[in-house]
Image (cartoon, rainbow, N blue to C red; front, side):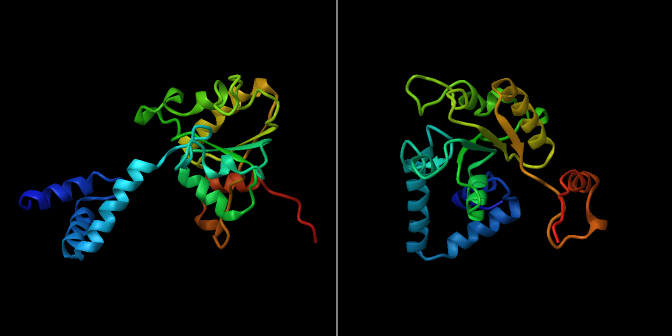
Length: 209
C-alpha cells in the first residue's frame, strides 16, 4: 500500500479491464515519472473522449456525431448488415477491406453466467426499432436488408448469441449467414481443438486446380 493519491491512482487503474494490481502499479509510476506535459495530454485525451464520443444512434458503433462514419457513408450497401459484439470488431472487419455493408453493434454477447441476457444487448434496436426511418419501421422489416451476417465471436457466448438472433430473424425470410471459422493460417492440426477442427471440416470448400 502506498500513501494517499498514489494508491488512489493505482486503485483506479486497477479497475480498468485487463489491468491487474502489478500492471496498475507499473502504469502509475510511469505516470509519476512522465513529463507534466505528457500527463496533461493524457488527461486531456481522457476528458475529450468522454465528452465528445457517443454511440451511433443507428448501429451502436462509436461516433462523434449522431451517426457514425459508416452509417453516413452513402457508398455502403444498405442491403447487408453485419452484426458484431463490440465496436472494436467493426475496426477489425474494416481493416480487411472486404465488407462494404453496414453494421449493428450488440454491445456484448449473451452470457447467463455473467447475467447478460438478450434484453441487455442492442437486439431490440435491430429487430423492433430503427432510428434511420422516422416511420419507426425496423431495420430488418422495411425490405432494404436482404442479408444478415452474424459475426459474433466463435466461443460459447458468441455461438449462443448467433443462434438466438438466427431464430428471431428466421420468420422475416432474410438470408442469415455466419462467418466461417476453422484452422488458422500457419497453424498445425495437432494443436487444434475439437470444435475448431470440426468447424474446419464443416466449412471445407472445393479446391479448383
